[in-house]
Structures are given as structure tokens and as C-alpha cells.
Amino acid sequence: MFPRPPLPAETRRLLNEHDRRWPFKLGMRAVATLFAFIAMINFAVTTSESKKNYSGNDWVDGMPLAPVLLALFYDPLVIFLILYQRHGRPIHPGWHVGVDLFVWALAVPSVIFSVGDGWFWYWQPVLFEFDGIIPCDEWNFWSYQCNPLIYTLGKMEIAANVFLALILFIHFTLFVFACIATHKWRKAIKKVTATEKRNIDLTYYRSPKEHKEQQPPAYTPPAEGSRSDVDHDENPFKDPGHNADPSEDGNSWKDVERGAVKYV
Image (cartoon, rainbow, N blue to C red; front, side):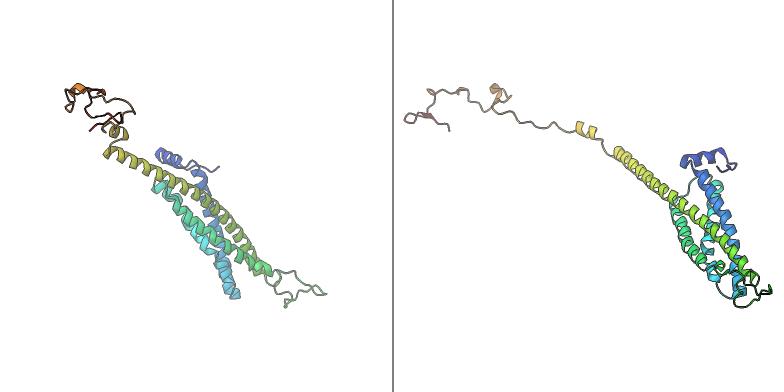
């Protein structure tokens, strides 16, 4: 859509790697710069002539100079920094969020006040007398024949506000793009931070697999009713003269009356 400037291959590679829509965005800033220059001339001339000839109404056309001058300064600065000073390395999109928001937020009330109290609202048709003469009295004071300057100022105000409205639209669009880019930037930072933290953990701490291999085996209690794996012959507490399964006859603690076996 926009002609691409002659740039080094490395600069173009970095630009495409960061954002493939960079020609469109920088082209919008270039167009906004041109519109801001035209709007600045129109508003400046209108403000000066209003102050000199009518001693008032200058703030209406002076207020829009704030967003116009800001756009005229910031947009070419961004183009120069990205293409020629940083050689394709991106600027943090948070800057664009703040400045673009400031531009279009100032442009909204500027357009409202400039249009609401513009000189073109004073235009009126001329009233002729019976003999065709145009008297410049109170009835024809704001007519073109009696006061042509306000028609010139009104036309300049209309042109300036049209360009200011276009600047507002461009910077609002750039503001939306900047918000999306800021969100992606933060996600990328979080991803890089998480990766770095994981690499540090793997470098200075044992991995879960190594940690598990170095742990002793867990103790598992024998099932109910099962015998111990210890050999009875090697049991130091075993009585050599005592049978493994004592019978009722060999038990000296037999209770004859109760017919039960007692063990001490």
C-alpha cells in the first residue's frame, strides 16, 4: 500500500520479525504528519487573523494546536528512531499507547469546540435594497460582500478540522494497535522470564528424576497374616529347647480348669 523506503537487509529483517505490518503503521504516521502540518498552518493563520481583526475567538482555533503539534513532533520522531536510529529494533509499545492516547484524547474536545464556535456559523445571505445596493449595516455585517474575511477564516477552519478529524482517526487506530502490541509484549516477557527461571532451577537444583533416584526405598509393611522373612534359625531370641509351635502337652502353664493356654 505504501512505498517501502530503501533500507538495509538487516533492518528490514528486524522489522519483519517484530511486526509484519510495520509499513502500514509507519505509513499512517507519515500521513498523519502531513495532515498535522496542513492543520497547523490553517489553525495558526486563523488564530492570528481572529486575534488581529476581531480581538477574540482565538482560543477556539488555538486549542487544536496542542494535539496537532504533538502529532507533528511525535510521528516523524518515531519513523526516524525505528528506521534510522534503532535500525529496525522496536520501541516499547507502551510509549505509543500513552502518546497516541494523548493525541486523540486532545483532538476530540478540540474538534468539538472549534466546530461549535467556528466562524462559518456567522455566515449569512446578503440582503439587497430596492435599487440593488448592498448596505453594510447590521443586517449585512456578516455577509460575504461586507465581511469577506470571516468566510476565508471559516473555510480555513473547516479544512483544519477535517484534517484534525483524520489525525484523530489515525491515532486512535494506532492506539488500538499499540494496546495489542503491549499485550503481546508482556506475554512474551512473562514467557521468557518463566523459561529463565526453569533453566536456573535445572542448573542449581536437582531434577525430580535425580532426586527420586537418590531417595531410599519406601518402607512397605507386610500383609496381614504373612510371616516375616527373617530365618528362624538365625533369630538370636529363639529358645533352642522351645518348639516353634508349642503344643498343649508341653505347656507348663496349662490351666486345667479353664482349658486354656497362658503365655508369659
